[in-house]
Length: 114
Length: 113
Image (cartoon, rainbow over all chains, first blue to last red; front, side):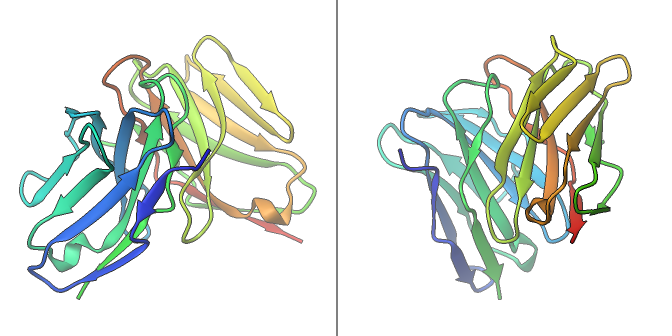
């Protein structure tokens, strides 16, 4: 049973470009969480999705950021018009049940904006 | 406003001794607590959890203690090993649909040989 898969592992974008981060949850998991870790900081919640639904996006910046988890395919975190402050490690986690068991994390995507 | 706090950014312990990592929370609705371990350039790895109906959960060298009245939990690692050197994150959630996991800022543990 493959773990949570994130790709790419490293992504470099110029200011103003778009970044697309992908997350395939563990088999049988229908709940996906995105977290961001800025340098020297902890994990900050961004968004919680279930298949085709956004459950909680309270941690997501209001502009430029969006997330989806379609019926088929991976969850996508999309950052439009990236700025230097978006440089961070973005982690995806999945769980089979909401809030009742541990979430399993992927290895993260390290986004660098130049 | 930080709902989950880990007030010690770092901790150094001698190999073979006990490591105690602390975590405090402010939201009394939290009823499920987890500890994750993270190595550089890797994702967090689940370590151990505890629900609010318990005050202790043990798994090998790792024990988590929960004091609900003080809104405090701690992770004990005994004996500590050099491979335990990592950043440890405390996390909390409210059981039920629609709840996410709230993480603390982490404590960097260094186990010295």
